[in-house]
Image (cartoon, rainbow, N blue to C red):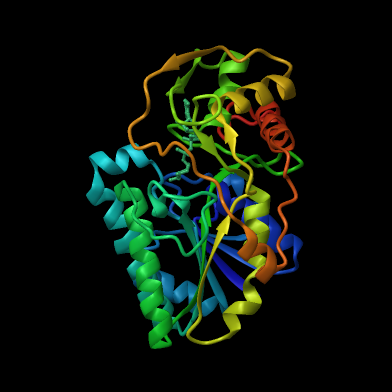
Length: 332
Ligand code: UFG
C-alpha cells in the first residue's frame, strides 16, 4: 500500500514509517517539522515538508503519490498547554484535520487511520478501560481528539472515508536498534525524564502526587511500546476495505504500572539511581488508566511484543545512550 504518514517525522509516526517499510508497504511522509525531526525519517523515504492544513498542496501529494491510505499522527499533545491555549489545539488538531479530510475527498482517497488517545475517556468509573465506555475528556487536548472521532463517524456513515481509530495509552520506548526514539521539546513524559534524572542531565524527578488511591499512592498508567502501537496500524488495513467503516481500538498492554515502579525499572535497566522528590499532584492527571486490549487482540490478531516494562525502558535507554541530545546531536 502507498501510505501517506502525516506527522511521520514525529515520535510515533517515525516508528510507524519504519514498520511500514519492514512490512513491504510504501510510506510517504508529510511533516511541517514544527515538532518533528527530519533525521527521524530515513533518506530513502519520500519526504514533504508541508502543513497538513494546506489543502491544495496535500491534494497534489495524495494524487501524485497515488496514496491508498492516510495515517494521521500530526497533533499537538501537551495536555497542560491545551488548557491554557485551547484555540491552538482546536485550530491544529481539529481545524487542520478537517482540511486534510477535504484534501482526501478532493483526491479520492477514502481510507484513514487516526491517532486518538485514552484521554478521550476522561476519569473512568471502571477499569480496565473498554472501548465502549463513555468518553468524557477532562482537557481540551482530549476533546480535540474526540471531536475528530465524531467527524470520522459521520464521514463513515456518509461513505466518504472509512477509518480506524486507535486510542493509545502511554506510548513509550524506541526502535530496537536505538536509531530513532523519543525527542520532545519540551519533554513532559515520565520515562525520558526519569532517564535524564538518572544520567544527571536534569535534576531530581518530581513524583506528581503520592496520595492517589492506588497501591503505592502514585498514578497507574499503561506503558505500551511505540513499535507495538505501530504494528497495530498495519494490522488494521484489511478492515478499511469495507465502505462505511468506523472502528476503534484501545492500544495498551493491559498492565498497570505506577510512577514508583517506573523509577525502579529505570534504575534496574540503567544501573543508575534516579534522584526523585515527592511533589504535588499535576493538574488533570487521572489516578489510573489502563486498557482492556481484548478487542485489538481478537479482531486484529495483534499482540504487544513488549509486555515487560523493563524491556520497553531498555529500548528507550539504548536510544538515549546513542543520542544523548536527541536528534540534534547524534553521536553516530
Ligand atoms: N509524572 C511524574 N513526574 C513527571 C512526569 C510525569 O510523576 O515529571 C507522572 C504523571 O503524573 C503521570 C505519569 O507520570 O501519572 C505519566 O505521565 P506522562 O506525562 O508520561 O504521561 P500522561 O499519562 O500524562 O500522558 C499520556 C500522553 C498524553 C495523553 C495521556 C492520556 O503523553 O498525550 O497519556 O492520559 F493525553
